[in-house]
Length: 327
Image: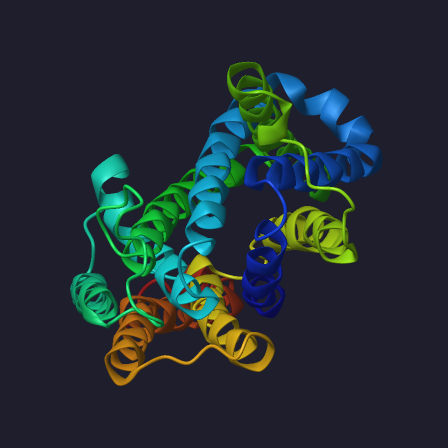
């Protein structure tokens, strides 16, 4: 799923170049919500009382993340957007400490510092093709403006990871409940995008949300691909897989997403990153690994110790009961 999400940066960037952004998101998430509801409608009906409210909150974070990411992709490179979005992995321990008073480790603080250094290098890197945008009411170069929008997206995605982990552990303890929670959050985001489209249509007219005619195959294929695989399947697979994989391992795997985004940006769009931008991307990637790898190793070691203790635990009380005076 990390590879798939990395490839969608290129797909979405090409699609929104000729398709209204809000309409694209509304159709993408509506398609995903309908597919999930068709599969998990029994679980949705049985669990809506305790999963609808958490799904609404998690879906709101998802809604904000994709709005900022999709608008940002209009103004920056897909490869840069991929690395900036990857900052959500580093922001997770920071937000956990703020929201749930979980003190971040030294590794998390160091990884965050490296990632911030990488962000600085990305912002200092000259945008490709010049600044362009002067005289059009834009105060910042397009690349910098797009980077800031994607940075806001990373914050919302980090909030999504934190809230989803909180609610999925407490309320989604079976595959059916996991599917129901995924359905609620995707449906909440779809309703949010449809609401924005309706408001835009009422305020500025239908031209703001209607795609140009004739419609090419690219945005249509992008809606189907991102709706079925990049949204419905992706969130279902990730939520289900985290029932068996520790969150730290999952975060490490997701840290490869910006690498795939840069790879597809180079192969498909011919994007090239300058030296400073390359150093910034490298610092972000190293920061993500530094923030998560020690915790993953510690969790693995603890798990092995618990398994070893469980395997020998029952025999120890029996031996002590049999010979209470033995040292």
